[in-house]
Amino acid sequence: MSKEHEVRRVGIVGYGHLGQYLVQRILKEGSLHHLELAFVWNRHLEKMEGTVPEHLQLQDLSEFDKRQADLVVEVAHPSIIRDHGTAFLSSANFMVGSPTALADHPTEKKLREASSQSGKTLYIPSGALWGGEDIQKMADRGTLKALKITMTKHPDSFKLEGALVERNEAARTKRLILYEGAVRRLCPLAPNNVNTMAAASMAAHTLGFDGVVGVLIADPSLPDWHLVDIEVTGPTNEQSGNTFTVKTSRQNPARPNSVTGTATFDSFWSSLLMCSGHGGRVYLC
Image (tube, rainbow, N blue to C red):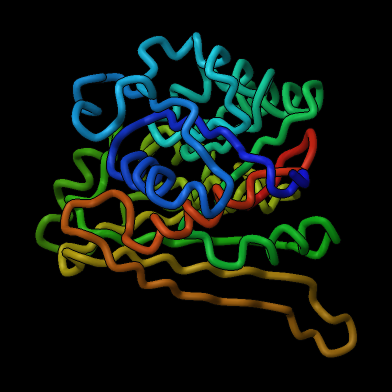
């Protein structure tokens, strides 16, 4: 069997809506893509009863390496990345579904080092980020000057921490800007909601979490939509004085109260299929 057709064993960490979606697609379509499940882990094992074969249920996450996964996919919580990320990278490629964890500088540094040392890839899925590869190319060339991402959702679609909780309550009757500033400070306040901003901060590596601007807006008139607006600023032409800019607006249908928009599920599946053969580095997929 040629290397590109070798079966890749995938471990899924987390069994919420996104984890369930990925598990069921692998169970149904894995053979078409040369994938098979190595294990599924969830903090509450009973959630997997009846849908995940018992022999695939992993009870102790610290024993993941016994399942010999080629790729570990985290779709659980940023704390998983902080606590287990370097261990995952010691023996498998690792796709980070909660890149807000990387806003913690020591965590990002440890995972980059672990990837380089093991030769395994730290994959960052694009999720709801539109144009991430173009942003990364501009950063690579040194032409990315500014990046601003505005995410707008219904107040019930947010899972917030700290001061943003009370501010979000005030948005029940009117559109309200919850936060505007560096993405690094926002990630711990909205760890489940701003993974798109975190992925953009990794792609825009010359700006990073401190240089990328995030704007979080609660809008009670949007019960079943997630909006993502991206503004990219490039270099200014010395002769004309004109500045390179790109603006995109993504309207992602979403179930009421849902953290993740509908189209993001398919995006994650496409990212998973790309996770092979990129070596010891960080790779946007």
